[in-house]
Amino acid sequence: EKSGYEHFMLKEIHEQPKVIKDTINSVLTDENISFESVGLSDEDMKNIQQVYIVACGSAYHVGMVAQYVIEELTSLSVRVELASEFRYRQMKLAKNSLAIIISQSGETADSLAALRLCKDKGVRTLGIVNVVGSSIAREADNVFYTLAGPEISVATTKAYSCQLVAAYLLAMQFAKARGEISDERFAQLVEEINTIPEKIEKILEDKERLQWFASKVVNIKDAFFIGRGIDYAVGMEGSLKLKEISYIHSEAYAAGELKHGPISLIEDGTVVFSVVTQSALYEKTISNMVEVKSRGAKLFGLTTYGNYAMEDVADFTVYTPRIDNLFAASLSVVPLQLLSYYVSVGKGYDVDKPRNLAKSVTVE
Ligand code: F6R
Image 1 (cartoon, rainbow, N blue to C red):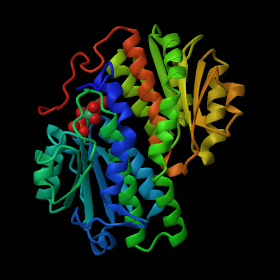
Image 2: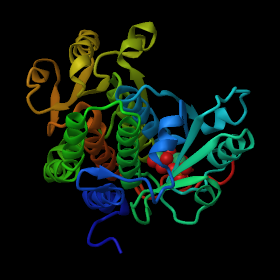
Image 3: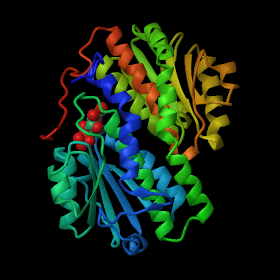
């Protein structure tokens, strides 16, 4: 069932264009997004004032991206919380709020507990879930199903990508229902979101380059990922992917935090992966790259076509197609998925079944 691919992870990486398209098409027709199937009306969206996003692991990283996108497009206040922390805090949940629980399996114990806590406190819950009929899907007030299909590899790729587009679509419709976006901007975002699948295809065509680069870093002991805004969230995901399947110690930092401590870890030859797609923050992150380079770091730069100045500072540069800044995570995550895949293969590890990890974490 690996359809000719050596591992499920690689197969699932390649399925992304199709499953993203399916997920988009489940709520978007022509120029209109409808959450009727989800059970969220425009009126509901107008009345919500506060959004909590609660999840674990990669799904939490989707929440981080979602926060930036919702904040950019709407007047909503958004908090992103790790389910394992959220469930034991004494948070005062605002009235008129919506709790979004993101989970591929729909069975993650902490996420389920967080959902129940929200319901007990009278907060409306929306699950972004992949597995039909799972506990979170059954118990949430509303469900937006991602259409990633069965994900076998323990390290998530296609479910993460579907969760991202689900979050974009929600943000877009929130903005529209609340009258906070112009028709032109909305139409532009509809056009852009539809380009994600073909742009991922483009990135996948270039995978040999990443394979080559991966062969150069298989033996590193530590890795760092830096970025700002959405790029920071992608760095978190890239770092998790790398550590979970290649067992390389890896940390992700908000680039601006470097000089508050982490920069002391940089020495000659330390590999730093820099995600730099957000135009407003481009110069800021580049200057952080220069800082670590002057301390001996080897730099992997991930940016969009056109930002060729990256080559002046990075030792190895990967370009992704241009896309609206809000959707950049959908493209920049793909080279990082491929990179961790090839590093794991290069080390001879069991890519689809990394040690100590389970696909569905049903105990806390
Ligand atoms: C990482 C990964 C995990 C999951 C996390 C949440 O590749 O797969 O971090 O994202 O365990 O799982 P779900 O989405 O099933 O709640």
